[in-house]
Length: 155
Image 1 (cartoon, rainbow, N blue to C red):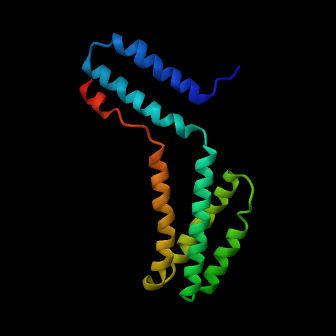
Image 2 (cartoon, rainbow, N blue to C red; image 1 turned 90 degrees about the horizontal axis):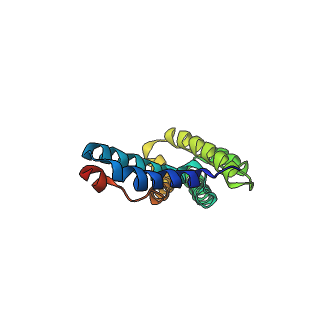
Image 3 (spheres, helix red, strand yellow; image 1 turned 30 degrees about the horizontal axis):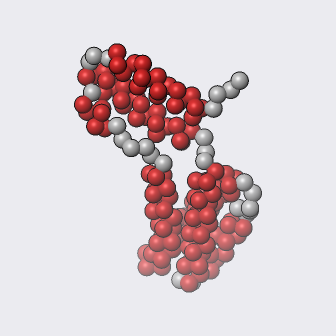
């Protein structure tokens, strides 16, 4: 029988808090235990990819890249826009993780293409790419658990 990793981490966390913590007399040791629990809590949801988060990132990335291609076209960088759209076409419609991998590669290409433009022409395309990065940062932070910093500092 295989125990899912998130279930295993939950069990370790519970054992640390319910069995080990009450036995610790040192503030320093308790602080270290809370720090370890804090890491476990945040690691738990990052081990296995969550399909809904992968899908949200893929949708955001595709939208941002298409907007970037439009911006490239508008500033007269038709070849760059065509190259990016061609790469976007290869992302396909398969499983989210496969699409996301292809879209991330397209994002790297977009960064390279935009970097080659004069600053004034690059600005609208950079903004399009930045929208995805801002959204992705929020998605990444949203899965973090509340910090145990208070408990860590009190020990």
